[in-house]
Length: 300
Image 1: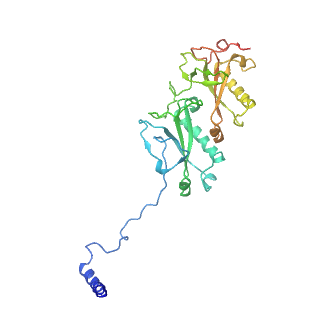
Image 2: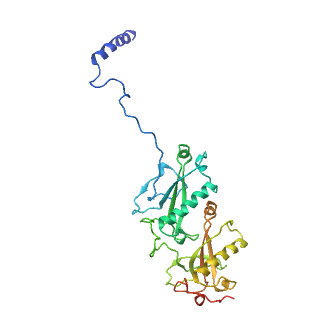
Image 3: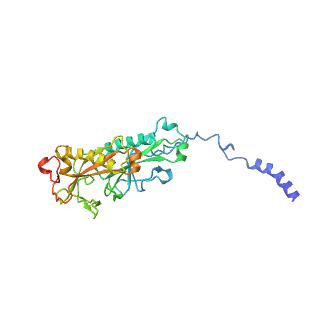
């Protein structure tokens, strides 16, 4: 073995000298390469649709956009960038923080702009997607505003896998996304058991009247808090039907006040959807702007 190793060691310099290098090759594997571009972080794009369910944390590896003409679950309506001091933090904004509320307000405005009308007047839900902690450490400072269609904005609403973009979906003209009239059903205790949407020419007993903003109020948890919300919605109903907002309004119609979940309330969504509700009635047209004759004092 010692002899063989000595022979190989002695032959190697000779063989290398005889073989030489191919023409144009100097043996340096790096000095002819162009400089590589610096690494860049992943940046999502607005106006894209996605087959995956909404997620408040967006990983690069689960991001896959699809043609909005194909079936999808969510749509990115806007992509924003965090500024200081949020951008200087060691991790993405926590739920309920000032930075999280600020991003939600931006998404609120941008969704209305993207859809061409107030999104709360439609079967739409919005959410904010942030980078992962690892991406944030790597320099990612984006947030995505996501919009999705629900079968209903009431408690039993589920996500709809839709086809077609939401861009300008509320920009004038009819849209099946808009909130209209409802056939409210109650259980034996008088609580709402169901609220299916129907056309206003069909028999119904409730109608969407508009949105009331509960500025500075906590999420309602008791009868007193709900009473404040109902008063706010009564004012919306009065303006919608064109009837006096006085003490007799409660005898003209009931109201249904529907804020979002406690989770989105914490994020800063204090919009409350308001509906007039005449239990037992069989209306067959909209009451918008029809005045006191269409909504007489009757429960007093």
